[in-house]
Image (cartoon, rainbow, N blue to C red; front, side):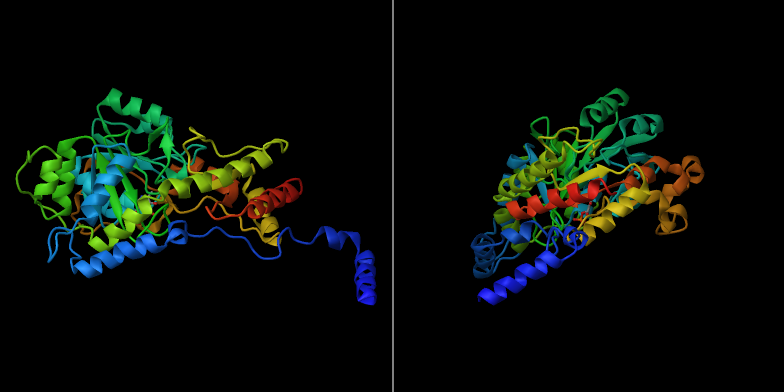
Length: 429
Ligand SMILES: Cc1ncc(COP(=O)(O)O)c(C=O)c1O
């Protein structure tokens, strides 16, 4: 025993100082996981078992009266600070419902950020309208100044997409929408549970949509929701997701039907999904608070680094803390940071979860579903260009920022390791 201790001490003493310094911050790699599923427990299980026992998986009728999706809608509306909520099959479906609610169609233009998820662009094209891409700013969200330059008499909607947990500059976007008489849709797919000015995201604009897919705050694998305070927008959205009809419980919630039967798709949520989401919704604040707390510790642990600049946060108290991103000033330095963090066994990444729309080949070629599809037939549609040189600022911002993603179940040691790793590589990068 004595001898073994001595040998170990001697080999430590003999190790070259440089090699000791180079030992990684972590022995096992650290990586953020999927948030909601880490909180699955008997609550989700019991919700699912209820649906099985009732043999009533369809939301509107069955051997027993189903209530999961309807209850989810009520609780979701309350949590999101909106009068009406509509549960649907995905965030993508919710966006299409929002287009129908706002009566977006051929000849209309919709301004959206150049950096966002496919669903946003696709919803506009599927409605037959023209997507107009605006540059992002250092929040990684749509830049209000860029939006203002793109408004034309045809602009009918602005999509304020709150990406990676961070609210847009909502006050400026809302002022623009009001000034020009344009509707504003908040896409909160990546920011479920975040707020702005103390009010939940999604409750500020004419409508809000959310995704409940696995990469989001809470999840049933797939799922989506739409909220609004306007009974007519709610009715149009609800009719679109249910083949044009408006079921009695929704009509009752809206104070009666105001419109007639119309056209629509089927994006109805089923009771299994509704049950899991009901259980997850009740954990949303716990999940968000845990992530936020971890992110705050990372910000605090790095704030004294010389020259440090973080992604801009229009509301630091309301943002989710899904990631902590630093401006490395050049792409080369951001890449060096990623490599250095990998050597420390702490996974770092560039901003993610979205695509730079004007750089995608099918968008540059203005492909759609049919040669006569209306989106690109108008004079504006024919003239518009989607190409990397239409969004140089977006490309630049996304190349020079890099950081770490947060997880609600990171331990104090995990968060400490993140801070230590970034501090260790900061000067070298
Ligand atoms: C900004 C944004 N909008 C909409 C969606 C669509 O959500 P879903 O995947 O539930 O269809 C996503 C999905 O990632 C998204 O990131």
